[in-house]
Figure 1 (cartoon, rainbow, N blue to C red):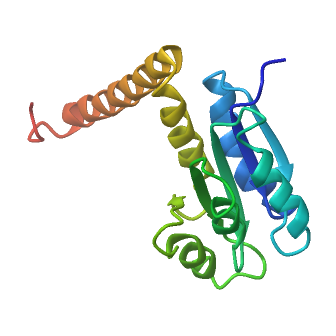
Figure 2 (cartoon, rainbow, N blue to C red):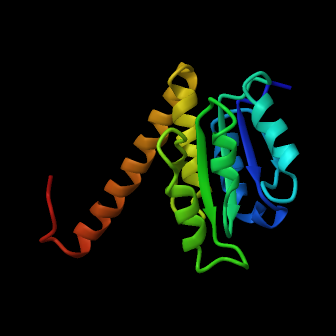
Length: 171
């Protein structure tokens, strides 16, 4: 089994339905990852141990998903030099997700957390893949192919619409 390059952590297993998208995209790019529950509030020592050992265990990026007060990404970022990508999760105790978004987004200078949109774990996985791709040509090539596929899909949809509405944009 390959050493994990990306850590996916979440404050509760109730966040897994959202965070699964990050795992899925990393699997698509054949990037080894680990996935676990680490709560900033209920298991602060586990969080400190996780963040403190992440780099020495071979991780290159951490994706941290959290809902409500959403302290996990910022606290982990304060304890590691690795890039941390925060995924705000709309949870049962959240204020329509805004509390999570702002908790992760509004980090003080010196403790950056890259923040994706609410429940956008897929984008967190893609960003992690792009970061890994800066040092791994195979991942970079796979990312280029992924983006080309998205472009091809959009062009096919535009062509389909052009057949129905001939006065559209023609490049």
